[in-house]
Image 1: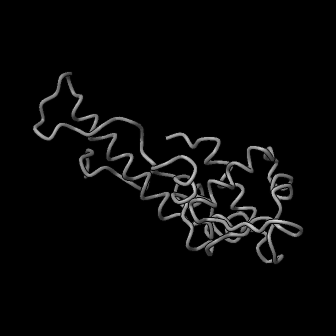
Image 2: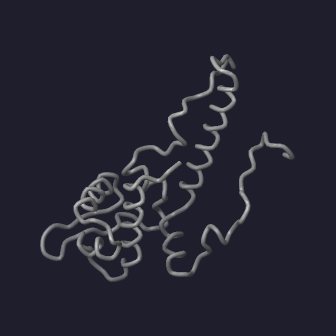
Length: 161
């Protein structure tokens, strides 16, 4: 899976809001754009999608801007990416044939593998919260590369299982 530009920008925007939530009040799109280095017109579109998904609230007028609609602990990376890109999948690989009949050699087996990979990605992104990312950004949490240097998931069908 490749995280889209929209998914990356949405994550960066919400991280910025979370990192500065103690400043009180809404944060303008301009301030978010300056802090994150994101293009403001594109960021406005992304924030509208995040608002539609219930992840941010907006206030219009002087002193207006955006705030998180939920606590960072209640926002998963899956919520963020899905808000701007739709459901998270490994790719449009389809489902394996239930009867095992395949048109091409090995196709059903690979379809089942891709489906399993997609399920692990979905679970990982559902488990990781914005609060986890804030903790890492503030130097208080371990980065994913510090937690494990080897894969944490071994397929049940792999050799040695």
